Every structure is written in structure tokens, then in C-alpha cells.
Picture 1: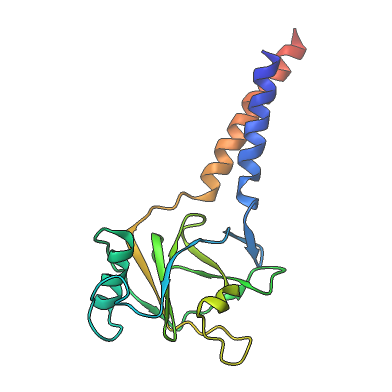
Picture 2 (picture 1 turned 60 degrees about the vertical axis):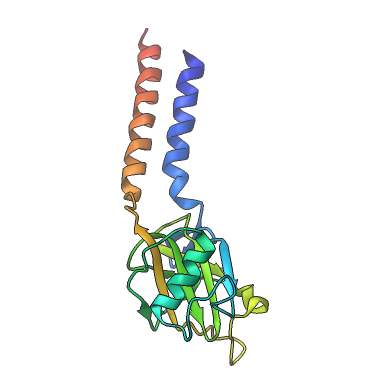
Amino acid sequence: MRTFSKSLVLVASMSLAGTAWGYMIGGVDVGDVDPLAAETNDLNSLGFCGSGSSESVESCWINNVLGTDTTYGVKEEDVSYEFVDGSSSIIGFGLDSPTEYFMIKNSTWWGLFENNESLDWAVIDSALVSAGFNLPDGEELIISHVAPIGDTVTVPEPGTLALLGLGLFAIGLKGRWARKQT
């Protein structure tokens, strides 16, 4: 019984601390770096999608990458980002629509990222400069637009996880207190 109680306290503690494991921007946990799923300088590299860089051409390239039809969300332009605390290459910005993937267009480069950490944040390593990001003045990353890709995902409230952890912690303490009374 004692092992169960210790395990319960450990699980509860991990649940309470779980929201502090990602990168931070101004005290906000934005998750970890979202992996780059694909990148291109040519939207027709995986099959003919058309000319230019319209939403339909970008969506065609994304569908070719993922091998399935996806939903191209509302494009966000003039995206404002911030460097994560203590980093000079990892940036983050909020997403209006939390989705499974997001696409970033930067000059003549497109990147498709899998959004698998904090779904309402995009977190990327801007050291992808060698992969084609355009840094005209050497420091300022220019993002033409961002588009959420796929179905909108419901993001659980961080408070829900904390409440679960607190409840488990309280159950563990109650069991410990009951043993001391006997």
C-alpha cells in the first residue's frame, strides 16, 4: 500500500509540473520545437500543383506531402514572433487556430511543420536559415504568412491537468494521513 501511495504522489507531482517542461516566452509555456515535416522552394516538386503561390497551389503541395486531403485554414499575414527566453534561434508565435500542422511561407520557401507540442503555439528553430529561410538583414526573420493545416484541435486547458494532479496529490496525502492515525 505504501508503494501505491508513493506512486500516486509521484504521478500527481509530475502532472503539476508537466506544464513547465517546454520553452517559455515571457513566462508563458509555448511547448517544444515543432518538427519540420517538409520544405520546398518549388511547390510543384512532388507533382504539378499550378503556378504561383495561391492557397490552392500551397494546399496541393501540402496534400502531396501528407498523402491525404487536408483543410487549409485561414492565412495569417504579418505574423509577429518572439524569441523564446534565453535563445537566439528558437522563435514562437501564437496560432489563431490550433491544428495538427501549420505552414510557413518565407519569401520563396515553404515549410510544413507538425504541430505536436503546445497546439496553440508555433515554435520553430530559425536556424533553418540553411534550409531556405530569408533573413535579409541578418537578424530579422521575415514570415510572409502562416496557415493552419488540418482539422482544428481542441486544446485542453492547462488548469485541467493541474487540477487532476492536485486531486491525485490530495488522495495520496489523505492515505498517508489515515495511516498515521492508526
